[in-house]
Length: 171
Image (tube, rainbow, N blue to C red; front, top):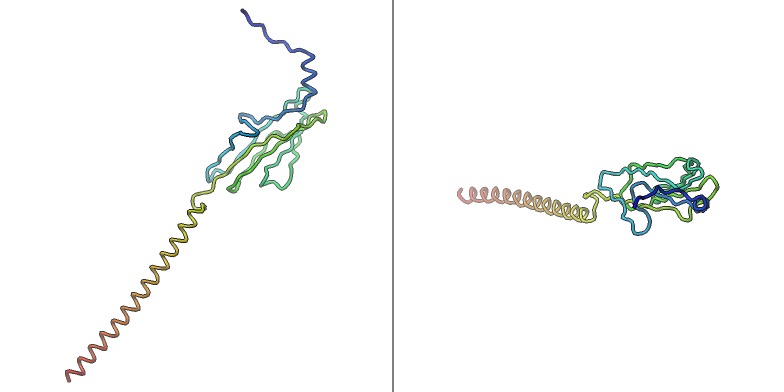
């Protein structure tokens, strides 16, 4: 059985044009249940490229996006379908993007993608506990050294006093 090439059905194309645009991130699954992007400590740069399915005028699709937790408000980017973020502090963020077609049709719901930037090991809670223990150990060693120096000084004074008493007894 030989396969024929698919020919578009004009009635389906018209129905597709009336649908709301679906937003897709290139090479990444989005939405509920999608795995977040994990960035290790020190790698705090991420860029996004996205598209919306608009068959009438794809070059006139306008995008809006926001990295919740970094951007204070939604950024209306016009036809630009990419963005980048650098120097992202450790934490969990949600990147949301929505599209409006040239006909004014808006996506039902923005597309979401989660980004997690891990903390460096020296900022973890267990590291702070280690810092407190280290500080306590240093203070304890300092106190013991001070006590030892006071004891050595007192012993030297007593040795000198004993020597003087022996000299006085022998006279």
